[in-house]
Length: 317
Image (cartoon, rainbow, N blue to C red):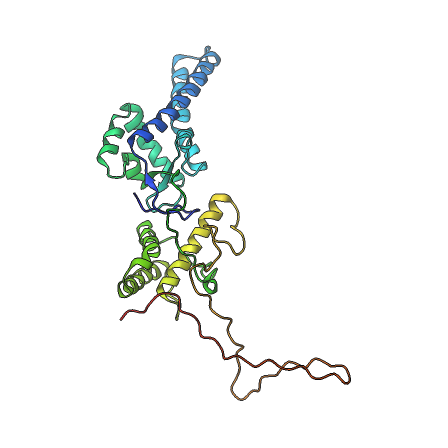
């Protein structure tokens, strides 16, 4: 079981795909690609019958590179890691941190796949997948990707807790481009296990991760914000950006990419009291007019201001 998070969903513990399912998916992709390649080659042979041998060879090489290399790369990029074979067997290519792949990941996988799959008939890919603990071939190692199973039983995977409502959207201008994937994975794993950790150990881990994240973003941690809540808010902001990039739109007001309301599992902060200046009296709201003979409305007793509830993170001893 590999604990990963997808960028637009937040389900963890996705299962890495092993050799049999991956081999069947690649075989289906190759069968479809070869059928299309043979049809296109036949049409090109009829269309270029009047050309010389060098031109026909150039057209054959171009069609090979386009159909057996370029098209799979484009399909994986546009489908965010789902080719026809992977879609049929419930597989998907994700980054090492669980996010959706991009063009550079698909390009590296496709380029290395020409050698380890097409030129060696899959022998190198099979050996690498058997040796790897997570079933990765060489293309996955160089691209920093992993093929996982998406069809897992529902309701068993923990979720990254969304941030408190008073922190949602506060980091929309934060630069997250310099944060490495390994740090994202460590933060997500901490957030999913923070309830199982010793309070002192969890607080120390949260402070260390928050300082590392602040150093990577170039923006210090906001004063008074617990490290765990800060981590959850920044991860939520990244998931929102990934979902917007993947689906071409916002995830909707008041809803996190995981489908949960912001602040689920956290305590909401009360609204701040109006600021006053020393020596300046605060104007009271005008009393509502009453009809002649009617008794004045009874003013409800004022409640003392509530303290902000705990966020669930204990400070280090």
